[in-house]
Length: 612
Image 1 (cartoon, rainbow, N blue to C red):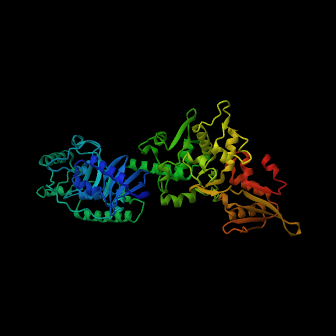
Image 2: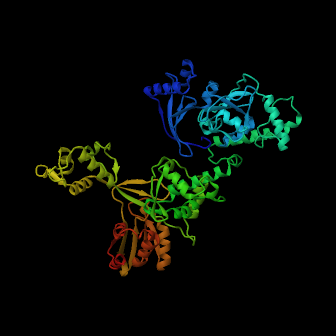
Image 3: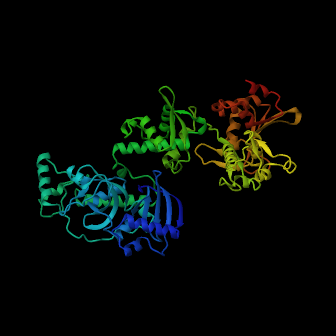
């Protein structure tokens, strides 16, 4: 869970009431703790912080940390101790033991398999499926990981100690451990020896006779056993002391890589996952990458087949290939169904046998917390942003008009939780006004098309000359007056970037024809940058199309804005360029979209462009 870097959302000191509640929850979750031990885990007066974070997979986790180390973490309303807490209280959880070389696999994100579990002479701890357990190493009782048992002890033995034993949640040397002081596990002497029982040894010898080899879970530590048992392997490790030493060095290097903030898991650790788990991880990565950086709201509804071929496949890192049949989902429809159950998107069958994505919740924690891998961020945009001819492709921004709440209008929006300066869309404003009218029972009983004007509506919407004359307003008049009294804002969202909110209305692209000496004319274009258009690129294309001289100069009165000036009246070339090349995929919008985008002055030949 914490194999890769996580994102901290907030870090605040715990409140007194929350501290008492946490103490009660810890006492209920771990009843074996004495009052003194409970005070050590959740101190009464010492500093204790509440840290809310998102893991690299998008899971929301709450961590409780003292001045030095994280002591507990909570996920899904369940409390889990960290390795720092378990080192102080090693008997807090039932413990299962494994071999030191296995630790390096667990650090890479692998779960603990039953062949790697050591069976002590006293037998395994009795646990049920879903029990939280500690994982220790041979010769040391200090836990190095915690995990959830995937089967009960009886089921483990019945399965011949084969299969997946524990789902690892947190481990020494992961990112949660790195969040603390990064101390190494203490040495806690075992209460008893850990050799396997004679019965188990006899079974292992029988297995050796039957299979002609020794199983992976039969590596003993009793030196009195025959020397040829030393050739046994445990998960392809521990073949000799030299191999152990080299693996320890490799694990240390991997730990250093993680501590330095490298998000890429080393290849030898990544390979510890099964091919199916690797394919699932790749599919999830490309899915969230496509939603966060490529799919836009204006493109919905979107065919699921188009989404897979044009968006998900294009997000696949170089050298890798998505094969859904090799994933646990087997079919793309089942994968989308899983995402729909998590309320990330909504899929509907708009026509018989054809499914489309009709809605995406871009505010979902899984999308917001997803971080585009460095390789994808550096390679994919460079590939996707160029067409077949190597020319840069243009993705129009999404522009949404917003309305800001002024001090005059604040009383009207106060009941809905909005304050002065908050920005809302027109639909949100409409919803707030309707809720306000219904909550205060202002709908006229005789004619429901009218709304009674109370003191707040009077102060917010009516002029002084109207306050004594108007006692009712039509719904349309009420909403339009409300929008008129709000301050204009706009939100611009470029592909792959966070939305930008600016005050006022967005300036249109300004195109003018200016007269120069000797009756020469020039075409001047301004405000291209506001829509993500590079003035130099536009100038180069116009120069080739029109075969005329072009200059790019700084826009007077600005520092970071430029204007393009081309010789002659180039309205036709400019209209084809802007409306065809750059906005060709916007033709399904109304004609007014184009008119609002371009402010064309003194152009006698432009009328036919919008009439076609």
